[in-house]
Image (cartoon, rainbow, N blue to C red; front, side, top):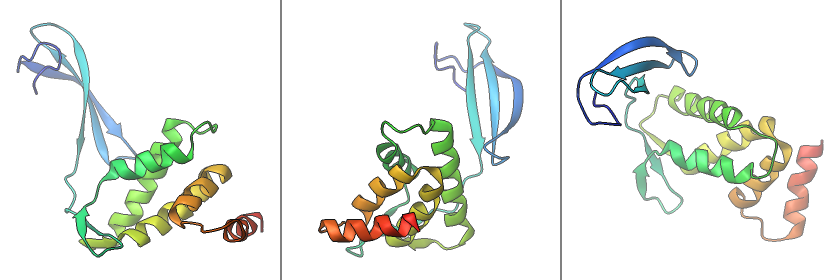
Amino acid sequence: MKCPYCGDEDTRVIDSRPADDNTAIRRRRQCDVCGKRFTTYEKVEAIPLMVIKKDKSREAYDREKIVQGLIRSCHKRPVSMEKIEDCVNEIEAEIYNKETREIESSEIGEIVMDKIKNLDGVAYVRFASVYREFKDVNTFMDELKKILK
């Protein structure tokens, strides 16, 4: 593993432990040349997943799009990055448990909607307003009524 500080390739593992609910391994490494420490994560390479968008085009699944969507929805809300990461891990687990190579973006959106509801009510409404593309106040109020029940 190349050192991110000096670029040398002589590094060694000084500690390893499970991470992300045993789906990854966190390794602390130390460079033999400059002595600085850094962390790496090792994950199983998943089957490539393609997302079928509304216009029927296809693109590779991108975890970062879900993370960014949740961050925007949780803006100025009391939701930690750890909770957001946990939520994304749950979403991803559900997506990959379907054991399919292609998934509709609408199906991903529904999974996100289901998980974000437990994360924060305001974040749920924010996400829903973008995902459901509310055309007027009445459709927005209908969604709010569903939450309040």
